[in-house]
Length: 185
Image (tube, rainbow, N blue to C red; front, side, top):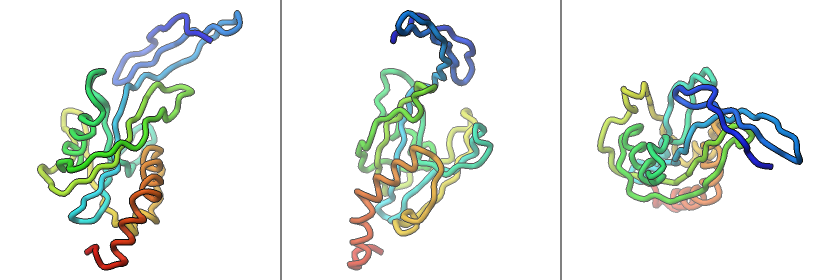
């Protein structure tokens, strides 16, 4: 298969393109939603010993969502680690102490070009109020969960589910073990 033509059908906040694809002498069209690249992070406050999530209304699903902190890369040259460090401060108001890459993935490659760079971030110092950027029409609140609450909480956002499942295998056992030995507060 090869793409023989790309046309823009709509350009707004995101872009919708129509790709002409050739396969074994046949041509067909596929719509591709161009959203860009994003970075997201599961954030853990080492002082409060709580995970911090962003809560905001998402028009596409017509409801408020609890999600890992996330944002779009501003340019092709921007590093995902720089993006998520900025987004953590903008959305929840924290400076990043430690950042660990978890996964890079395409959440829905059948129709979306978006690639997400997923991180685990540790924070300990709130440096601003957070809440998002007014010029981006963001109204972000936070949800804080202890490791025990995180283990039981249900999420419906894909990147957040992936981050939480990673944490259940890689972070929660250590945190819960420390708590049971009296090392946690």
